[in-house]
Image (cartoon, rainbow, N blue to C red; front, side, top):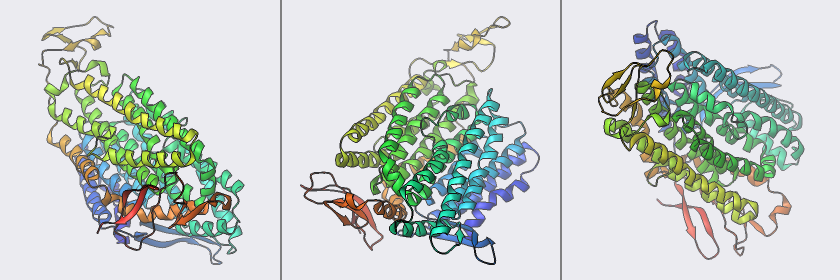
Length: 594
């Protein structure tokens, strides 16, 4: 299985060699390569067994000295943190190729080659089990997207590409320095004198060093800030988000889909994969400030989104808000929060990736994204309207769809933490909840303006038309952009089969996760427990007064009036999350339903 995983990661890179030199051949070859890779990726992902710590591991020596002082391996594998992000990457790549079918007619072979290189980079980030390999794939995603935005973007594409590259490169350099510090510290104080870059081995050694008080908080804080700046730029967290709206607006549709659906998740994945297991003491100390940062992003992103006049920019700011929810769950440092934050990353990729695809389809027809230019489109484009409605309802967390599950778990974790800690964290929980209301406000307002009311279509050419009569504007007159067709005679067609197929797979998972989230959550649990184990060790003896250890979680005594969160250790891998309630406990526990 490990060999198949390696093939799936590098198959797109091999496809670069056979793309061809014409638009017709390039897009067909790229679609075939992507579909084959997606089929293989899906087969691997859905064979991931419940309760597995790791799966489909592939390791070969990459670089090691004869004296064994340095160990770097080409190591790939899946676990509960990466398996669904790995699958989501392939799913959204199919969407990206199909929405680019007619939109990219200039230097198309080069475009599709870069898309395939980006595909390999994204798959590699989520499967790498070696720090150096992770960083190589991490950097490999920057260069293709830089050119995709800079060459095939819109009016300010070069500025957007440069800003994107500088922000992310600066952050990744700091991340690399932090990772090197981890490797050197571990080699120096573990007693082996061997520098290993293996992520599982490093986390095990650091756990032992922390249990022996040989990895002090002061060192962890320095390493945390280096890692934080790199991953926070990628999420992005406010105030490191300023590159994102411009990059989204100027990127081609495929670039926006992959940026929102996959590349923004690399930051959140980095926190889960590296930051929490490596420096949990620092994260625990800074958790109140990190939660505050997430809530600021939720509220700021929501209000800023509502003020936008461009559809694409509105959805870009909605990403800032929704990713605040993802990281809020992560920084709650509880099993429910970790499950919810990771699941919400998947949900955001499905919903927002689909919304950017819809915006691209709308732009292909009308060549504008100005909200005021549209109205009543549901009468003329009913299929497009239906697709947008489902994606919008997923984004705002409608019960029965995937967004509701993730937001519910995140808010549940936040309120349980706030109930335990009290004070300002309760205010943060309430403010975070307001983000749900604000999200519904601006998204439903957008849908109402675009699809309801009198039919209002922007003209796709500089020859204006009023009530079916042509109107030639004066030379230099830009007011033609404000004239609209109200007769319904504009030659615009609804979604075709290719565009429907670009979105249909996303809808399957939007409904599946909404109806049966446990299928996905159960496979996350073993990896979440490993993070939970590191966080538990971060609790100092003074914090254990009046507490007892239940499984891997430090819990208040049952007599405490505070809400408890407990995920009991069970040998049965079919355990699932479920609500429990009695006079002393209101929380989430692990119970057997088989």
